[in-house]
Amino acid sequence: MERLSTSNLKLGIIAGGQLGKMLIQEASKWDIVSFVLDDDEDCPAGSLANHFVKGSRFDFDSVYEFGKLVDVLTFEIESINIEALQKLKSEGVKIIPDPDILGLIQDKGLQKEFYSKNDIPTARYILSDSDNDIKKALGRGEISFPFVQKLRKGGYDGRGVAVIDNEAGLDSLLEGPSIIEEKISISKEIAVIVARNAHGDVQSFPVVEMIFDPRANLVDNLICPAAITPGLSEKATKIAAQAVTQLDMVGLLAVELFIDDQDRIYLNEIAPRPHNSGHHTIESMITSQYEQHLRAILDLPLGSTKLKMPAVMVNILGEEGYSGPVLYEGLKDIMAIEGVKIHLYGKKITRPYRKMGHVTIISDTLEESINKAEAVQNLIKVKSWKKS
Image (cartoon, rainbow, N blue to C red; front, side, top):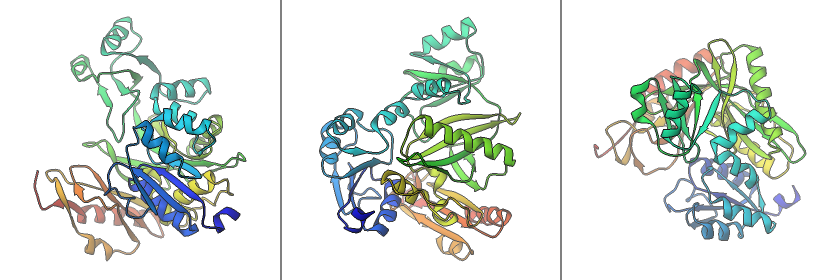
């Protein structure tokens, strides 16, 4: 904490999207000097960072040279040049979460093998190198319809996933190394944000329920606390704590899970960073996910994850049929609703289903928050001066 008081701590963030922006907003409260690497000068975090460095997170030299500028290096997205991070680590640069953990999480196949090795419940799966492998596995009876195909690398925000219900769906198989997993009969999709510091202290935020937009396969809104039994909530929290501990990870881990129609819980995917499922923590918790991430990576005591008020988070997505300079409708109307907190990410260009911001609604009761969230969704629209 002494270094923080000197205002000399240099925090580097790879990628300058909305997660980086909100992390900088939190870091600025402690007078931390922020650096951002991104190839887009108009990225959301670019205008807030003390130092913006233009460069690609995929390029070895850009990532390596950026890492040499800072005291602590972190990231807001998984797809980064891992070789550059490994070299920086070998030279003593403090990178949190650790590049070895990031390398595992970048590959969904390695994720699955980690779950199996550590007895973490997950959907049954096989690994596949090609669509021909998948068809052969079907012929051998190793998998059956329906199943879900996920590319091992590169998938993000619903991309890189195909649901294959029958033989006709084989025409929709994705190309590339994949995991093939049984299609779970999902009752609810939930998430737990868990943090761990270098001393092994672990703190989990309350379980949230995620409601997805079926058209974009993105979270439409999020409910906290999740409407599940205390027993299921406890089990989900234990799975999240087990995952972050078995990884021996320092930092913030977002853990996405399924509950099936028989109340069994399966770990779906993990992300070693702040996450869309934790945006509501800014207003609804004593400690936000962004402050908690900073506490963890700077080896500080973890903050309280106590819920202040029930909350619903609504993603603000670009409307279908509009691409171009952004135009928001309904902001004044939703500001008139008590408990509405608006976060616009600063993206100048909208396109269908692009994440442009979020709204958190807090109320005395969850029912009130849900009712107000429905009103917000009906009022807020993201359009453009141009129709696509």
